[in-house]
Each structure stands twice: as C-alpha cells, then as structure tokens.
Image 1 (cartoon, rainbow, N blue to C red):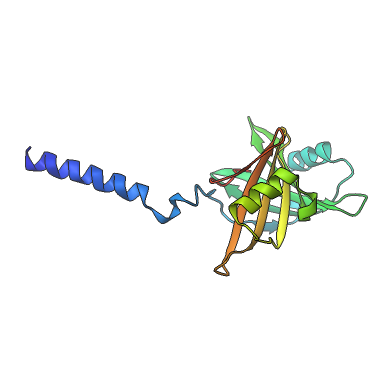
Image 2 (cartoon, rainbow, N blue to C red; image 1 turned 135 degrees about the vertical axis):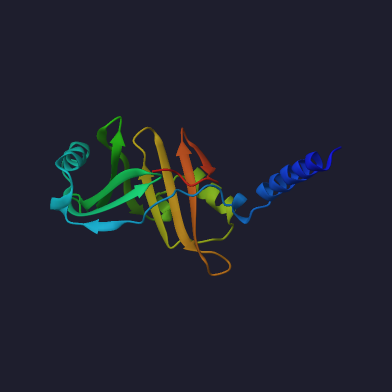
Length: 176
C-alpha cells in the first residue's frame, strides 16, 4: 500500500473513531437556538398574534419572546386562561404561514401519564425534577420536558415523547 493511501486510510479510521467516542454522542443532538429575547406584544407581527388567537381564543396574552432555532424564526407568546392557568404558544412559519407548533404548560409529576413517569424513572431512578413542561405538538404527540439537577448537581433536561399511549425517552432534543 502506498504511503498516501495508508495515511488516507488511517485518517478515515481516526475520524470515524473520534465520531464514535465524542462526549456528546450519548446526549444526542441539540437544537441550535439563538436564545430567547423578550419583546413587546405590539412588536409581534399581526399574523403571529392571529395564529395564537385562532389556536386559543380565550388566552389573555401578556408576554412574548423571539428567537431562531435551527435557522427558523419563532415567537413564543404566553398568557393566562380564564381558569388562571398559564399557557405558552410556540409559533413559526410552515410553508410561509405562521402556525402554532406547540402549546406548553407547567404540570406536576402526578399529571404525567403513567408510562411517561415510568420511562423517566427507568432512565434516572429516584430522580425528582424541579419543573415539568407538557408540550402538546398538536398532532397527537406530547413531549414532556423534565428539568432539575442530576447526581453531580448539574442542571439537566430529559425529554419523554408520548404518542399513542407509548412513552420513549428521547436522545435527540425535540425541535419544537
């Protein structure tokens, strides 16, 4: 084997091996987000507000945030429902139309489906999250986002997908 071919083969093997052992491989893909920025409701485009009101007509809007995720614009608008509960709607363009892609609310562990709680405790036995967000995707899929400190006292987030009565701990971060 010629030395240039041998070097090329070794380079390919080293790169392949490095891809297999990166520290983030077990954590999965993370969404590339710009970070949320608070904005005034009157700075939110009318089409975004119309999408929010069409989705949740009784929502009394009180706040808004803007960010980009994986290169797409998102507005998160939040407010209070008549029963006093708080909701947040994530809105982005789909085929050029502003669309609600996620409805979020904070819940307690007792409000999660049993299979979701079992999947979480199977992943991290005995762990107690500090915050749980139920993220309804509007298509039969609900993502449960669990936040808290891990055994090393580091902030952590675990997502569990619930669809058709089945729960699955996600490796890759959910896009919406």
